[in-house]
Image (cartoon, rainbow, N blue to C red; front, side):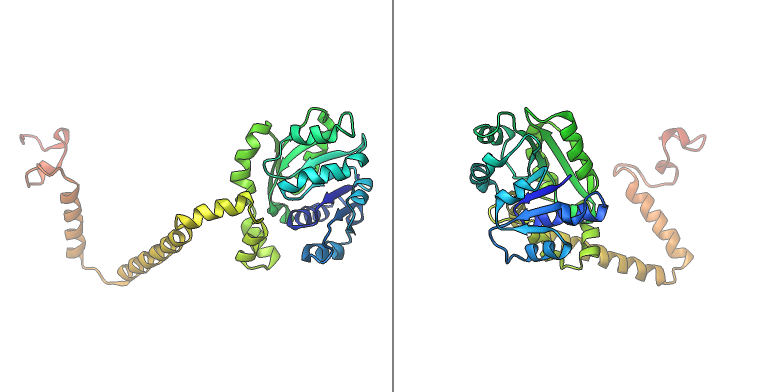
Length: 285
């Protein structure tokens, strides 16, 4: 089996790194194409031993499973370019947010009678094999095609099949918020958290819109304030624990707590603080 990536950006790099780390695919079995061969991700893929080319046609010809790892608005142009080279053996896997299976099939059917299309949503923690992936199969994709993709994506994290109309929701949950594996990415990648965040934020994409909402609501400030408040309170509790407290003070604290917990209309007196069925014999309300 060989795998190709149309697009050699962050997602292609993350998947290629994950596949090779899992041992499910050798680097020389992977081909990626990009019009910009000076990208940092292109350089990283080359160092891994992945085959690089500026021509999408070559990627198609050297792959069995073909990932469309480009921005959604580029998909129609890519399909027009590569459609004539799609063969029966190809499984076309779209990772583009919001692009439906039917729209891809419609484009490819101008060249191929029954193109096998799968729509997939994953996230960048696949780079450390902690990704979360869902997929939906198209009209002409067979059960074994879905199983092959699940074998690939299951090697780099969690993977399951869903109905296509659920994929947009998953885009907002896991594709646009790769929490699963984020801590491991921090440890393994040695990158600044801000850089990891930027890696999944395509200009105008779903993720950057989600982050805009979080920032507008003061999410970062809330997190900072919550951690700070917890830290301050922990220090206060530690300070209180370090103090010598007299037995009299402990007794007063307990009695004050009892009074606070009693109903406002309850009269003073020990027996009045007890439930009716627990009041001492002979005492009446």
